[in-house]
Every structure is written in structure tokens, then in C-alpha cells.
Length: 286
Image 1 (tube, rainbow, N blue to C red):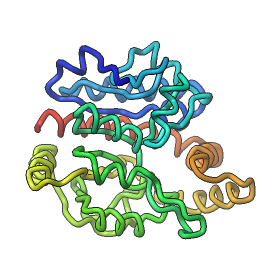
Image 2: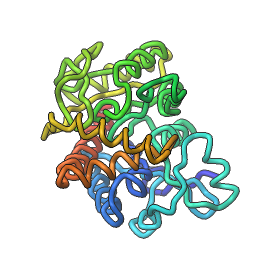
Image 3: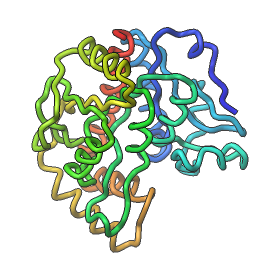
């Protein structure tokens, strides 16, 4: 069911990358370019990229550029619950953070780079929506590098759930949690690390104690501190249009890209690639 590429199988340092970003995180055509750039950044930092998705009845760990190009807007968004159905039904399944982590657990991959972590949706329990990313991170022995928690969510509530689940949250050279597009304004992180090597050391100690996943939050290099009103507008538009569940994030991202003059699109691309590079640095230090 799981096919691991020869390059990934033979590598000492591996970084998992998701395919939902490629299929649903960017305008048509842009996602492939971002995915390939993230892979290049991983290689430049001394690790091997393992981009994960479901193709032709198999879960693929390590994709060719041609295979990656098959993940477009028609792909199913594949969280942990969706992987088996995508395999049996031979659907193209673009893995979320949670779906990617589920495969990491099965394949023994301990590092991942992404844009932002899912979590508790605003207004909980109406809707009663909490991302599967959180449970998968708690049970998977892996460190995930992201720009914090997706800012369209209830960030403070998500941080509380991560504490309940025993997931360490580390700020990379920051004492506060980045808010995806913004480097500022988030709640305090429980611990701060100053280098990839220090993050790797914390991960090893956590795993030595029998712990599962960790979140390493890297602030975006170009902080967009004025985007919060647009996020409120996007969420209101999603509610008016009846957009719910897994469709909310791509809807909001598209709204932001269209109404920010492209600034959020550029920021999203940059932080995804930078996070992949830091994940590779941590993997190479492990």
C-alpha cells in the first residue's frame, strides 16, 4: 500500500512534505512550483524531500516532478480518515498535515515542513470543528516546522489543546507563537530554541521520554501585520456562502490572495519554502 522511493529509503535525513499545499493551497499552476521549490530547499539544506500523496492505488512517499504535477484542484483532500478510501478507490489524494503525519508514522519519517498547522476553528463548538492535524501530531514521533497555527483558526485555543495532548511547542528564535502571515501578536510559547541543532536535541529528549510529535514555529521573514481584518472578512464570506469543513481553508486562502493584492500569496509561498528548509536543517542535525 505504501511505496517509498529508493532515494527516500536510502537517505539518512528525510523531510516529509504534504501535497494539499500543491493541490489546494495556491492558484492553479502555482502549487507545483511551490512544491518543487520546497523540495529544492530541503536538498540544499542537506536532506532528502519525501513529498507524500496517493496515486494509482498506492500511498507514494517521494514523488517525481511528473507525479507531483498530477496534484491539482481536482485531487481529494486526504486527511488521516481519507487515506484508505483514496487507495481503494484509486483517487488522487492530496495529503493534509494530518494525512502526511499518518504516513510518516507508518514509514518512520521524523521531520516535516509545512505552512501552518490546523487546529480549533473559531467559534468552537459552533461549528464543532477541530483539525485532525492535532491528534496525528500528538501520536506521531515527528517534529513539524510551520509558521505557527493557521491564523484563520482560534490560535489560543489550539495552543491549549496542544498542551493537553502533551505536544511541545518551540519558538524558533522567538518567544511568541507566529500567526502564519504575521510574526507578531501570538501567545507566548512554552520554550524557545536558537538553532536547528537545539531543536533536534529537544526532539531527541522528548522522544527518549516516550513522547510523540513536536511543533517548531518559525516566524515568517516578511511579516504581514495588517492581514487580520481580511481574515475576518474571508471567514464571514465563507459563512455566507455555506463553506464548511475541509473547504474553509482553501476558500479563505483564495479570498486573501485576491483581496491583498497578492501579498498573502507571496508570503505563503516564502514561508512554506523557508519552513521546509528549516525542517531539513533540523533533520540533518538529528
